[in-house]
Amino acid sequence: MENLIGRGTWLDKLASEIIERERSLGRSTHLVRVESGLGASGIPHVGSLGDALRGYGAKLALEDQGVKSELIAFTDDMDGLRKVPAGLGRELEKYIAMPVSAIPDPYGCHPSYGGHMGSLLRDALDKVGAEYRFESGAEAYRRNALGAQAEKILSASDRIGQTIRELTGQEKYEDSLPYFAICANCGRMYTTRAIGWDPKSSSVHYRCEGTELREKKIDGCGHEGDARLSKGEGKLSWKVEFAARWAALDIRFEAYGKDISDSVKVNDWVAENVLSFHPPFHVQYEMFLDRSGRKISKSAGNVFTPQMWFRYGSTRSLVLLMYKRIAGTRNLSVADIPKYMDELDYMEDVYFGKSKVDPPEKLARLRGLYEYTNFLRPPKAPSIHIPYRLLAEIAFSAPSEDVTGYSVRRLQAYKMVTEATPELLQRIQMARSWSTEIMGEPPKVDLGEAERKAVADLIASLEGQKEPERVQFEIFEVAKRNGIPPGDFFRLLYEILLGSEKGPRLGPYIVDTGVKRTSSALTRAIKQN
Image 1 (cartoon, helix red, strand yellow):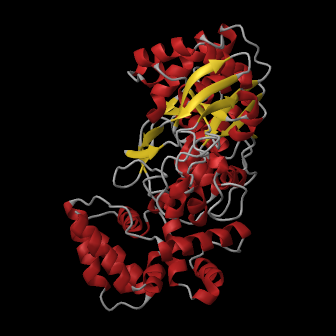
Image 2: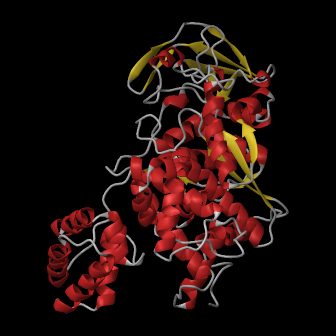
Image 3: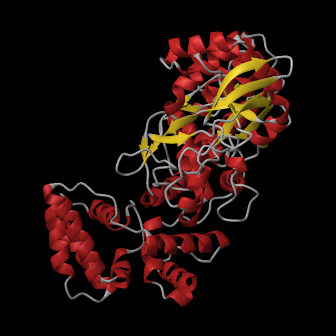
């Protein structure tokens, strides 16, 4: 335990490295700011939230080590619309290449398209209870908050263009400035090419020449004009904007996705060599993939939103997903929610000493992860823990007019609960939604030859059974006939039926659920092996 940093998690190690670096650079650690960019060009998914939550985790860990910190949530609502995301109306096509903050909200409830999309991510952050300072990119440009940095960048555009080519192979910025002016005639920004910089008037000269976005040609209107920095009439390109934000806001840490590593590399150089600002400490993370292995993306239409998660799972279970680790890709779908709900229950049992864990280092890490998942404000007592799939099965069979009452009575009959707490009732409703809208097969359970034979034996023994005690007796008898310790056989059945190592007394549960339904699940498990 001597080498344990903080609470033993990767967040503690990260905070320690950030603090050590800041001190080695001779910078004050009175306030260490963390930044996360919030996308506003499409419906935000769980990966979008992950960026902000990891930043918030770094803030918590810094403060846990005695350093005041603040998370800046910077929404990129000055970006242009490159493609209409799947599921949105084609009428948005006419706004391609325009700033999302200048596009009407297709849902009609916010001042702009960008305002609507950004609000969804902030709503998710608010629901999980994260604390942050919100910054709108469009507002930042309108009040010229990045003006001093933009002037230095545009004055050094020749050096920057050459460096971008050397670092990434992209030649675009050798004959144009890293700035997108908003055309005063057609309102588009990606169709303009910045061709001159006038430091006296602090303006960029541009021509609206057209461009290609997502392999589609977008015509320019031919207008030529000047965009003033002080009026927010354009924005810096991503290749340099991060650096401007870091220097303007004094950002000391920002994680980033693998897909923008080239942009981060260039921005680090710009921060150091043009703005004389040490770039923030970085951690690179991989992307979330869907079950088919495709990147979860706004434009691809396979979006899995935080709001969708909250329909079926708790806010803490989503935080756990983000805080378990930062490295490596993960395949994710709504079908995985029971796993994270049950894992969070297990960690709570460990935290309150109801489940034993060795060695001490592992125990410390699990306790620390649980504390961070609760934003360092863990509950004073554990909640009621029911395997999620069991709740889903019970809620699925409940009459629609009495879902919670029926489910609670079933759980009381199984002697798993004595009272209906508000949290339990909420879980029942989430499990009901998941069971009726999502529920698939429980995870595959590997069976040895003896186990396959025992499960097949039980299927035959269950036929025609209607009495809970007789079913319970048959499970014991089948285990003994096949030389399997009864405890091991019961655990196997729980894993097959509920995806858990434990559950209610199986005899009553199988009768309540239905012998045919149980036999079908057992037969499926055999066929999977």
